[in-house]
Length: 99
Image (cartoon, rainbow, N blue to C red; front, side, top):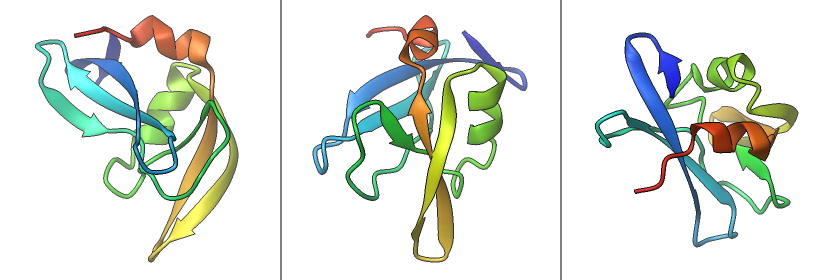
């Protein structure tokens, strides 16, 4: 489990229908949705993910703390700039719980 403040979270890895990008969401230990870690803006290479720092500003901090990925760029949408990460799937998978 990832620890974020008092919360213990796990990651769900899915795919967005549009662009077929990786979708990452955080769920509580009880299985309740906590926050979407990713946002779907434009087509990305496999294993890359745009982080939703607009709705979850702590997303990058969490990625760096748990070595979940490496920043490879950023993309603008509206008034926001979103970081793009190449995800370290061997680390991400340590925090994935299926169900």
